[in-house]
Image (cartoon, rainbow, N blue to C red; front, top):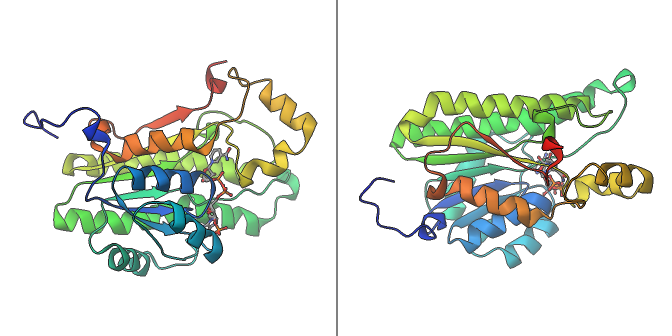
Length: 259
Ligand SMILES: NC(=O)c1ccc[n+]([C@@H]2O[C@H](COP(=O)([O-])OP(=O)(O)OC[C@H]3O[C@@H](n4cnc5c(N)ncnc54)[C@H](OP(=O)(O)O)[C@@H]3O)[C@@H](O)[C@H]2O)c1
């Protein structure tokens, strides 16, 4: 963006001609973010493991294609090659929304779950952004890398999720590190830090009435968020509407962290 840019403010949110990769695009927050990007005109590659969910998402997300992959094991070079081939050109935006949860007290927390959580939430986003950044820097192309953090970026929210809390804190640090190194060359990195969102990831927690009431009573807005309420913020971060924002985690939590 520069001062000769005569697009209207609403046009700054458009992603026409941009190519976007969304991990975790098969359901939940990732799918809602992919929907927002597609509606804003982007071509979108949806990455996750469950083929049926990807196919269903492709049926509703405009201009989208499915690229099935496990971010924990896939080689980022071949993942991005596959996405580029499916999208017909270089990738402009990545949204790292793949994730899962494992809840267990620290004394019993299995090392393999620690490794899996760190791998999906922190190592995979690092490796995919690293490879995408290499390509964007080599081509002199601008880019926006959008990460998904958590309230755990700022506080210890609930017990029994030590790996998730550590991984999400790491995501905040990674966003700042990428921003420090690349934003002077046109590549921004930011994150959305959601509060409590109604998805499969939180289903088991909210099916426990007592736990659900305890959490809801601490949210000033008194309700869970819907995935679409995260998606509009991701679209803002992906688009030129946020052209001077980098290195930030944007909290979207119904007031939780301020109360
Ligand atoms: N829900 C919340 O309240 C909340 C709050 C803060 C942050 N977040 C974060 O938001 C992100 C999305 O979570 P969500 O709530 O939307 O969860 P979700 O509904 O369970 O969706 C998770 C998505 O990630 C994909 N995924 C999981 N493991 C994967 C892997 N190894 N490789 C590729 N894809 C994988 C899943 O598809 P497959 O299983 O088919 O691969 C699914 O599409 C996560 O980073 C989560 O930590 C959620």
